[in-house]
Structures are given as C-alpha cells and as structure tokens.
Length: 150
Ligand SMILES: [Fe+2]
Ligand SMILES: [Fe+2]
Image (cartoon, rainbow, N blue to C red; front, side, top):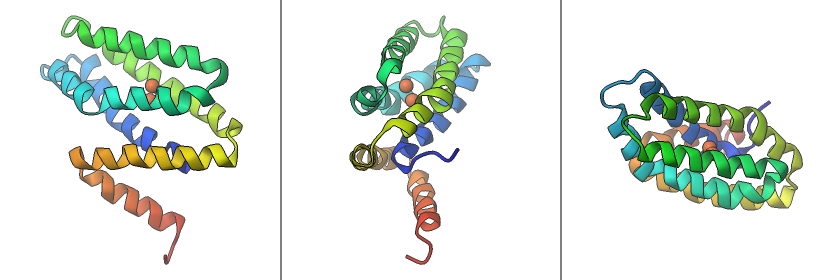
C-alpha cells in the first residue's frame, strides 16, 4: 500500500536509517561515528516527533514504540561495543514501523488527524533540508506526481 503523504517524512528518514543500520551490522569502521552524528542530527528528533505525533495515534502499539526507542538510545550510548546489536535493533524497529505501525495508523486516523499530522510532519521535513539538501528535490518530485501540471 502507498504510504500516506502525512507519514512520508518519517519514511524518508527511514531510508537513511536503513543505510546506517547496514553500516552498523557490517561493523564498518566509521559506523559508530556515523551513528552518533545521525543521533545528533536526525534520529533524536525523529524519535521525539514519532512519540509526539504518532504515539497518540498508535493505540496498543504505542508501548512498543516507546520501548524500542529507549532500547536504541541505550545501544547508542554503548557504542562501539553495541555496533552490531544497534544495527539489528534499528533495522528491526524501522521494518516494524513500516510494516505494522504505519499501516495501522493509516487505517485508523481520521481526515482531520491526517491533516494535522501532515502539517506537523512537514515542519520536520523542512528541518531535514538544512542537513540533507537533496530531500527538497525528492519532495518536489513527489508533489509534482501528486499534482501534475500544478
Ligand atoms: Fe521509531
Ligand atoms: Fe521511525
């Protein structure tokens, strides 16, 4: 199923997260430093926004959302020894969100909730453009597909 527009900024972050998870699982020498930098730049904001915006929409899945965030945060603090475990935990968490949590939220949220979420998620998306300029292009292409000829 196609991702709801309001959740797309989170899914774009997940693309970056999966690349990082792979570097960690493969124990690439620069992976711990990349993970620490990603935490400062993007991951901590991503977790906070998921908890703030998606937590209230997550129903019974919210406990797992918070719990896995705390586990990942803990593993980041234990780098570099936690490198492989962190990579696995991050990948599993992202896959769960994409396959279980996000579809559940998409099926549950009302049009009003979706509109509010879209606005708030777009603010997060704009913050990413400062650190990752090519995301602006990705979003523009996506908008062009949604509103051809606009
Ligand atoms: Fe998450
Ligand atoms: Fe996420």
